[in-house]
Length: 69
Image 1 (cartoon, rainbow, N blue to C red):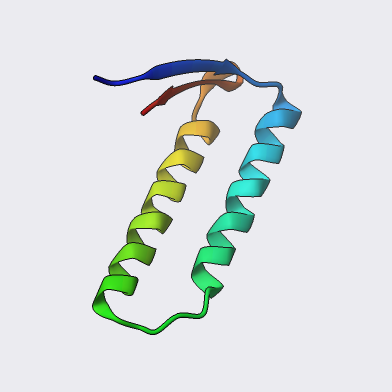
Image 2: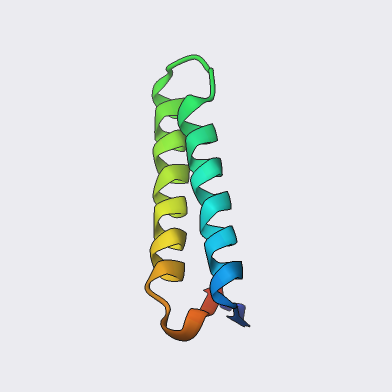
């Protein structure tokens, strides 16, 4: 079952959220860890999830976001 939540954000809140996601993305990219195939895959998956979430927020009309989990 998919859990959905609808958020209405002001432009300022949307900007702050996107800024935070960019910070997290940089943190994931710069994290020091052994370059195993598993760690590379995990990092790629995390970055993909962050990019998808950023795209969802950036593309939302009237800063309205539908979150699914």
